[in-house]
Amino acid sequence: MLVTGSRGFVGGYLVPRLEERGFRPLGTDREDLDVTDPEAVAAIVASERPDAIVHLAALSSVGAARIDPRQAFRVNFAGARNLLAAVSRHAPRARVLLVGSGEAYGPLAPEAAPFDEAAALRPVSVYGRSKAAADLLGAAWSARGLDVVRVRAFNHTGPGQSDDFVLASFARQLCEIEKQQQEPVIRTGNLESIRDFLDVRDVVAAYAALLDRRVPQGAYNVASGTGLRIGALLERLMEIVGVRADVRGEPARLRPSDRSIGDASRLRRATGWAPRIAIECTLASLAEDWRQRVSAA
Image (cartoon, rainbow, N blue to C red; front, side):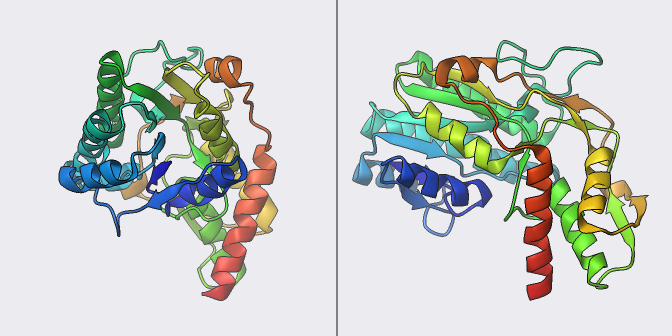
């Protein structure tokens, strides 16, 4: 088994999970595999001839993709293209989990039901477009005979996440305030947006379940089905850390208010998966992780 992007946030949880389930994952990351290099990708697939691949390698930050759209498409779209082409030539029987994003759907209309997999892909961010393009490419390769599972993962967080992501950023700032390393001010983007958050440990459980070849190929949302207001999550983190702070919006972080919620019924029917970790537990573990990181800095 091959796992690209194995030393990233999600990979750090997924590889041990796969080992627990009896897999022997070979992890690669950008230091040893440039997914934008088709020859390098073909070489490792030809050498390993894996029976399964989880493609995590990505430029995963919405903000970073907005700053460098060309790089976002090179990594997220061309990287997926290079992998699928290599699998077609050298490991055509492998199951490929092409890990995408709920951002591919774009915003959910007011009062609309959560996105299911039949919803149109109407992304509005550079990141979402790059992931939607890779998703459609995966569907095309699937139609040509490859065993491709297209994962549309909604927001997830947990210990170890970079502060490029909203809840980790809040947790870091609050812990720095607690340690008097920062003035009591939280700098934020739009707090009115609604997002569907999962614990990263639930997410990797879903990925592992989708590697079972009895699960039909196709698209699967990985989502809680519950929308949470970003501002309410910040309030809860303040309570957990025990810090009060002024909240100031920063223009560079602001995006329009919108909703994004996923329906994971198809995944549940196919695998029996359901989220097990409550958001309260996730926030508490995220806060404790940042408290330790800030103390060690």
